[in-house]
Image (cartoon, rainbow over all chains, first blue to last red; front, side, top):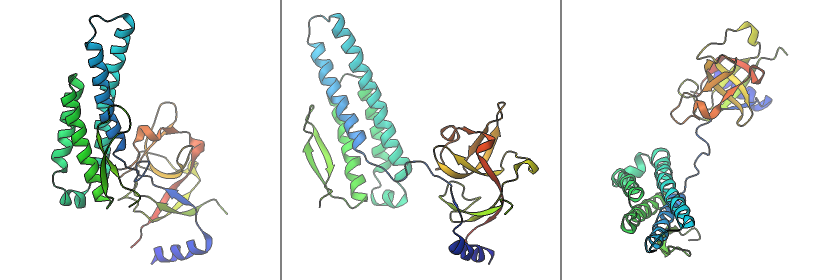
Length: 167
Length: 98
């Protein structure tokens, strides 16, 4: 009863609003960052393999080697963070009921990301991209957005799941 | 007239203690209240604007650290500390929706 009286007063007097924020930004989720990070790892592996083909490394090459390894490492961590946030904050019972593979898929992404960080292996990096693409496909499906597959228009030109936002 | 007023609460960060869309009765006379851990405060936060949070602790510099009650709340370290001048009042009563 008291609540109703205050609500009526609010309509007339417009009480100030205080926010009890949840994590910010709310409801802004997109797996594209994870996909780009997975692509970056493949690209770093390709560039590392180019260095590997050289008979010896100059000082510049050695600096480049360190930089590439660092980038591969940090993007591996980024994949985990991006997927972890969507999994923890967006994925809830309705999505899990619809796609029961989600928990296993996310765990596989974590494992594949570690593998991709640990090795200079194109195969490991491609496995990671494959899992992340599947995650993106499911993510967009839960939002009733259709998807299509296209090679990204830049190196490493690997297949990526994109949302078909104009459909 | 005396500074006390009602505010409407949006967001779930303080639930279940303050459910979303509750009204809170805020009293600005901080001097008469002993602000302790768990006190509910209306605060002007430089980044998040007017917020209602629970007092987590007062550090040795006299700064106030705030927290939410919900699992999705902005974490305490992300909110950062606020000075006493940013506290606009203490929540005295909560009127939750039915």
